Length: 420
Image 1: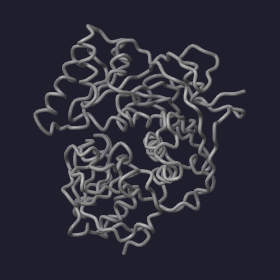
Image 2 (image 1 turned 90 degrees about the vertical axis):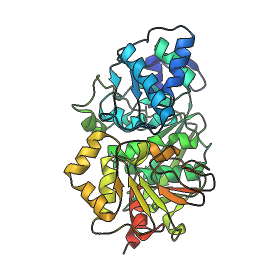
Image 3 (image 1 turned 180 degrees about the vertical axis):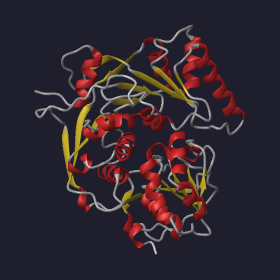
Image 4 (image 1 turned 30 degrees about the vertical axis):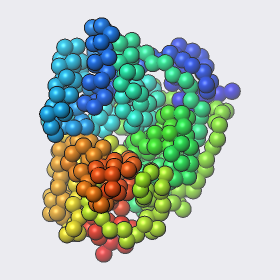
């Protein structure tokens, strides 16, 4: 019996020939990640237990992205703690404001994570890197502390699920729509502690930006990890970028899955997740007419160049509705600069939007777009829980960049094809 790509990666990092679901392993970690919310807690644990050195200064990444540029004194103190730790241990992968970006966009862009890696991050959306063909998953801050000290993680090999999208996705349907559809079908706990492997003609047609968006939201179905086996698109992305030698793996033809889901992508409309769960996903045609106060395009889900280009195409020559605030946040400084070079920023500003520095900001209700009571936002972010973006009596709807941009112009949720 063969193994899936997830099982192969875990076996290789645990020093085993074979691993199976429910087996517990100690796996060597290629990269450990923390941000300005989670890393300070891990640092405190290390200091309280007397650990005075990390396992490898080149294998730890600290990214100040959630509340930066510092939104208040508390945020400034947390970032200072992380900054001082990075300096003290001479960490290779620490990015200061002005060079930083949203962690799950920045690390692949910089080649810090590569195919075949085991990546452990104190952030639930660490599963993003599965788009490269890596095993990546989120942990708590104390677990991150243990990894930073030992270079290993103890975990249970997850059961395996496979999601096969056949056919050709229609216009405006991208990775965000396919993952929202998936979560809508199986629920927020439908993949609880399971590996979510995505495959099929429609997946292979996706660019890397859309693949990142899909794997990013595996956690919203409870998944331990999301993963897409690498192909020529992955190899092209990694060429000249990877700081370590990638390992390109595939699932064996006789690998076993607990369940295989098969859907025809050509039948899937652009999706909107209504409050207050990502699983409350519906075709955009069923949500049309819902009035909006704010639209956010960005985050670790949809803050990449492909997303900004889609938004700019729809906003060009148009104006944002008078009662709507449009906030656009690029994923990294490189994306910021490329958006300037391609003239996209002119489009956004001329349309009446604000284009600002890379930050997680509004996604977690931190800053740069917090909602007041009764306000309603449509966002390309990954969660729409009660109070996620501000007041508990506000509402958050989720979509891809096409629906978000078109809806910003209309002032209400709208299918991009219906934009006047």
